[in-house]
Length: 99
Image (tube, one colour):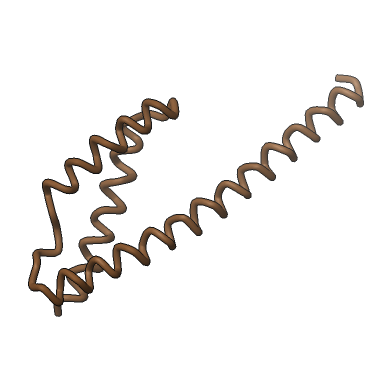
């Protein structure tokens, strides 16, 4: 391969990695913001003696996320697994507030 082709490929690789790093930061800060809200929900549920999980809400959220995934050209199964993981973390936090 000629040096110009290698240099262009290296630049593209660098640009993609910069974008991935930026998006990773966005994901982390977005998850942190989401968990602040779910923590507040957990406190409210504990104060009002509500169960830590809400299966109907979870089903709604999964269906909503699957639709969003399809719109974003993301595998809905992956999106579902991701949301289920987040939901389980949230439920664990809610249970901690109830003790």
